[in-house]
Amino acid sequence: MRVILAHKSVNVAEIVVTGLAAHSSRKPYALNAIEHAATLIDRIRALGERYEKQGPYDPAYDVAHNTI
Image 1 (cartoon, rainbow, N blue to C red):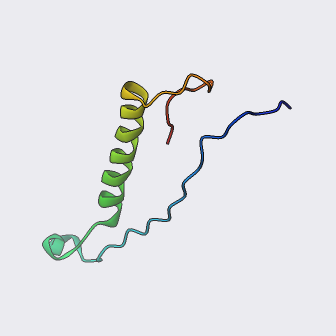
Image 2 (image 1 turned 90 degrees about the horizontal axis):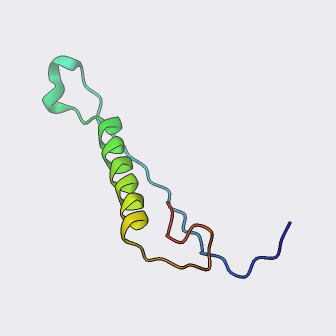
Image 3 (image 1 turned 120 degrees about the horizontal axis):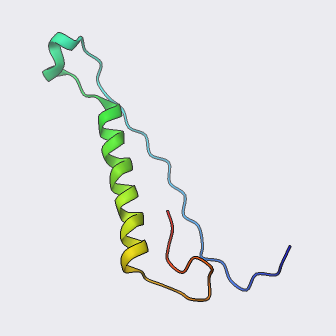
């Protein structure tokens, strides 16, 4: 164990994605929660990649950019 000089912080969020069930023949009347959750996850992943490429950076940390 080693002493740490700083902490980047932490943010926690709970996200609930709900849908509307329907038979596959009535897809226009349904809402697929999994598809919407996948889109959200992809956007969060892209944000993490942007932080890695564009910063902000702090060289005081082993991983100098924000992580998600």
